[in-house]
Length: 415
Image (cartoon, rainbow, N blue to C red):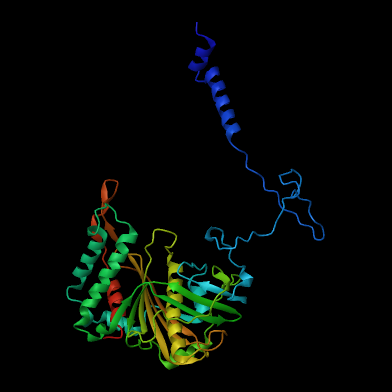
C-alpha cells in the first residue's frame, strides 16, 4: 500500500514537505524585501510655524522635518549646482513661444502645417518640374540600369547581413542617387554652382494670429545654390490665393504638440555665415530611416517637410527684405525630398508673403506629390505562401517615373 505522500505525488499534487519549504522561502523573501516608503505630503499653513525636531538634533517621529538655510560653501561645486529659476533668467519673457524642431510630430499633420505657414495646398508637382521629368533629353545614360544598381548596392551589397536595417541602406541609397544626379554636371554646367551642406541649423521666428512660433534645429541635407530658384506660380495665381480659406481642424488647437517655452531668443538665421558663396536654399533632403522614435509616419513627415522648407524660405526672405511683413516682389522657392529608402515624398514650397499674422491676404503655395514608390520589393529571401513563390529574391517592381521626378527636382534651375 502506498503512503499518503506517495499517493499525493501520484495524484499530481505537491508533497507536503516541499510545499512547507516553499512557503517558508517565500515568507523569508517577503521579509527581506523592504516596503516602499510612503511619501507624506508636506502641509504648510500660512501664519503657523511648524514644530520641527531641529532643537532635538535627531529624528523624532511626529515632528516636522526642519528646513534650514542653504549652505554656502564659498566655492562652486559642479556636482551640486542649482540653476536659477526660470523667472530669474535673463531671456525670460511673459509671452510663450511655440517651438517646432526636428523631433516634433504634429497631430493634424499637413493641415496644421498649412495653417501655421499660411499656405494653400496644390496636389502634384508644378508643370515646370513635370516637363523636366518627362523630357527624354534630361535622362541619364543607361539611367534605369544605374538606378537599379544603386538600389541593389544599398539593399544587398553594403553589408553581409541577411536583411540590412533601414537606417543603413536608406542613407546609402540617397547618397548614390545624388551622386547619379551630380554626374550630369558636364551636360548642365549650372550644376557646378551647387553645394551640399549637412548638420546645418536653421532658426526663424514669426507671429500667427496672437501666438509666437519658431522653427529651429538640424533638419537634413541642404542643397544650396548661387542663384535662387524661379517662382513656380505667376503673379495672377499668387493674387488669386487671397480668397483661399485656410484649413480648419477645430477643436484641435494649432499649437498642439509644439513645445511651449518662456526662455528664448528671436533669431533669424539661415545656418550660414555672411558671405557664404551658396546663399540660396535649393532642395532639402530628409532621411526618414531612423529605427528609434525619430521615424515619422507619412502624414507627420510631410508636415515636417513643409515646416522646414518654409523656415529656410522665411529666413532668406527676412534677410533680403527685412523684418517688416510684406508681400514679396520676388517669391522665394524651396524644394524638399523625403525618403525612407523605398517611398519618396516630393514637395515644392513658394513663399509669397511674410505677413503671416492674419488669415486674410495673399497665401503661400505648397505643391505636394506624396507616397511615390521607387520599387515594390527588395527581398534577400523569397516570400513563399503555400509552396508558391509570391515575391522572388532580388529587386522587383522598379518604377522609373519616381527617379525621373527626383532628377527633375535636382536639375531644376540648371536646365
